[in-house]
Image (cartoon, rainbow, N blue to C red):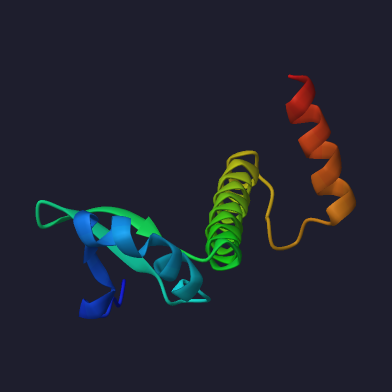
Length: 102
């Protein structure tokens, strides 16, 4: 959940005059929200911090995909009469190659 300090919400009219100061102060997890007509419109955020956040999101999505593939493969193996907890990596690889060629 975003934890934004009230002083870090800046109306666009004020942001125009303070942009250099805002960019300088946007370091690490200290970011600013620019509002337009009282509603959030944009954010000024440290580039490295944003990159770290994106990396974490990408990593979590990749892990979710891997977990989904594992679950699906185990279900497939059970449907084919295999016990996924007893199959060797070599046997699993052969099955995956066979599936890819079907």
